[in-house]
Length: 218
Length: 233
Image (cartoon, rainbow over all chains, first blue to last red; front, side):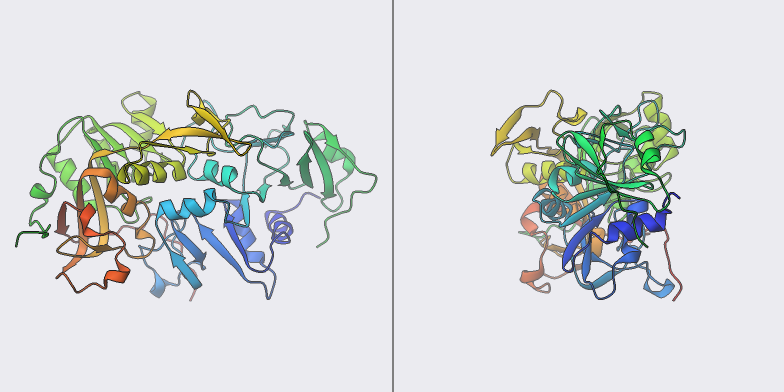
């Protein structure tokens, strides 16, 4: 069966390491914060200028001056720091963030990503996504394997305007964990009960399948 | 008081000299840390054909969104917009021009302008539509695009506290774009929640030194919340 959003978050959370500074994109990636393994210290970076983001406030902690990149009210975690947008993007663009997790519309075999614009629909902007994909070495894209019409989102070449070219190496979908290298997708793990055939069928770009593809364990 | 004293008494004085067609750089992220009274003053003045440089364009009825009501904005340079219906309408009907800019590039464009740097190379946007038509150079095997800095005729910023000389401190994530915006306007107008006497703020904890600030005014702020996410206590 396809992974639930929470199961996807649990799998991505396994990429975390103790002492990591992590930027989680808006949407499904934020769920990763709920699954940081016990005893592991991870600091969340919010691109509006906060390193060490805590949970939503309780009613008596509400502070309109303290929000995250999704404009939600948040709190600061112990050891947090606050800084300007230029400082925040110096961290991002300077490659100081250890792991970046973000959503996407499309990813292709060359590691290009399209995540910000669908022509003909209202264009809201790229926010910090282009900076994040250009600046980070370690990026996990989290998205459904196919769109709601069943069209594959893992393509030979992105069809939508790019967020970044040749910058993605890891993709976790609701069906599989996929690596990108040498201009091909490589199937690494599959969702429990999902066949390799189904994954290959739903992957439009060239996919290399090893002899053994383990199921993601929960 | 004269000399370094930047304090003015009215919002009319604070925004005096703003004219049709000017470029205004505004601090704020979403509606957090926005110079809400300075924006309201621009609305009151009715200045038109403005180019506004700001990460976002407020929401309907609050923040920069109010400048859409009387079509005072000709062009927005932002990283993320469309949290407001009016914005969408004016964009789709061609009344409003938008230049979408990656958020880090936008912050750097302001910072560079304030630091006297006319342009800079960045990897952000290379290989995308944002890089089209821009100079590309390779450094250490990686490709970068040339982005130009943005200076404003005015910059409008919001800080928490400042002394009369304009040495200012921001509060929490209401800092965001404000420190860079403060440096990037030919005239920087800052509004704050509290003005104190010089010497009262610890020099070690000043975020924006007064040299960048031309006019300072104390206001009261609504601080509207865009997304009220609260958990059970």
